[in-house]
Length: 390
Image (cartoon, rainbow, N blue to C red; front, side, top):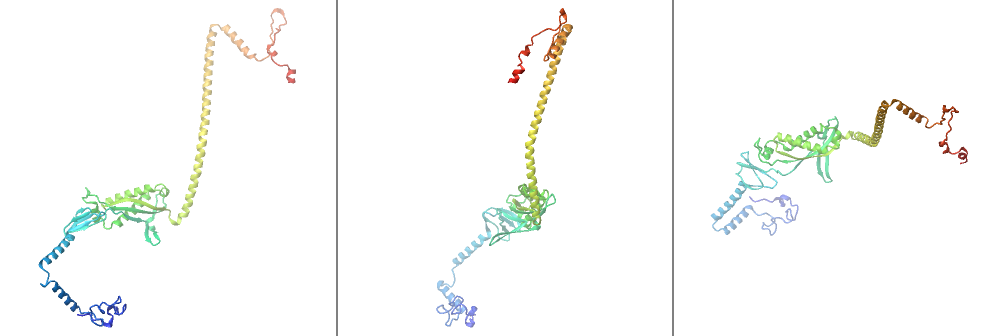
């Protein structure tokens, strides 16, 4: 049935050109093989002309049998190629399902399979590292990356009953190892068939593991020194949990992005931290003073102990010497008591009268009793006049 171009403009209502076409010159205008007056040719006429041209090319009235065979063979080869083969990219792993059941896995390259629905191929990207954010949501905008905090995921209770705001990222990928000896399943098979929503499962396990690790620690180590240790513990706990699920997921790393007190109390917390820093500084000054004074006191104490020990040794040795001397004197006294007694008396008198003026009296001989003597020690002393002149 011919197309009746009413209103002179066809489907475009005459807008866009002088002849009613959308691009200016109408498709059936002057010189285009159409009827005069801008009318389109009949479809029957076009089909008839096409048949006539085919008959001119093929006088027999149709294509020869060999041509039809070639066309059929090419079509069958193309259909067979796509029906019996599949290509696995370098970052993929081909998982072949036979009637919906895991049959085998194929590495990168061209492989053969039975046509659908007998065998079906899944191609998960086993080398791709996937990223999950917990406690925050990042979005790319024209002005750069925009991060929004998610308090219901990031606020956690510490071991000392404080609240900490933790944002972290989990990087994971699909396990590509061979079959497990216990379950008989390969890693990619576990990933495809054991968990329904891998992304949601990994995220929930990550949040649970972080809450468990944070809940065992005080807030101060979490904010300062133990961030790397916490990341390793969370990663190991996540891997252990996912392995118990036979999830076929490998946790590459856990990265803590932001660890702060809650926003409403962060100013007060900073004041507390400043006070603790002052306390630490004062304690360090006190430790430095103690490290200076204590060694000095210990040295003085050691000096006193050494002096006391020396005095002790001196006293003991003198006592031992006196005792030895007494024993020797007593031995001589036992041999000659009178002589020894007289000698001891004279030695004692010598020590007593050594520094005094002495007058010797002699009552024998009928004299006056005073024995004159020359005071040699007085001759050595200067005269009082001479001392005054000087």
